[in-house]
Amino acid sequence: QSVLTQPPSASGAPGQRVTISCSGGTSNIGSHAVNWYQQFPGTAPRVLIYTDNQRPSGVPDRFSGSKSGTSASLAISGLQSEDEADYYCATWDDSLIGAVFGGGTKLTVL
Amino acid sequence: EVQLVESGGGSVQPGGSLRLSCAASGFTFSSYGMSWVRQAPGKGLEWVSYISSSGFTIHYAGSAKGRFTSSRDNDKNSLYLQMNSLRAEDTAVYYCAGTYSTDTDWYFDLWGRGTLVTVSS
Image (cartoon, rainbow over all chains, first blue to last red; front, side, top):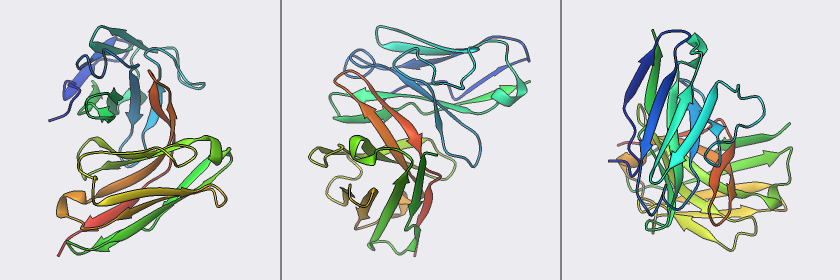
């Protein structure tokens, strides 16, 4: 059972917009910035969104992050087949005194 | 080019020990906090430990406390994870990750390719 709750799966057709949610609590998302990671099978994760809504260089602006209270979301617009991957949210938890991840969401492009 | 290269993984029996290493290059290692993150086969990501740039601050996940020890050698640009009393549930790919941290922000912006640890009799 992950501290941060994500839907296990999400899907959309090419060109559509998909949103992945991440729900937490006051000791984690409510107190700290949220980050999102993208992972393709057999490869290491990479940071996709940091500090709630910032994109590292090289990440397309089709990817955006937002946060409100104890929940966060990752939105992917103009869905492309190469977006098919696993997505994880993460942050720090003051109660656990450690970093916490969501369980991950497998995105399928139909 | 920024690189993190893990090594030291392998197969070990329950109760055994392993020492993972992570060699860093292409960035100022001594200025970077570092973490270990693991991923069991077919499962999600799990943070294991964090060590500050100086090595003075170390945090562990509950699953690692008392069994794993994180350390670093800034002169050798290297990060280590000593794992003792290994259990089957420690079987995972272990990633070394460069970590940005402040009072309100925390993320892993550099990742190695990982090293596989298998605990089995």
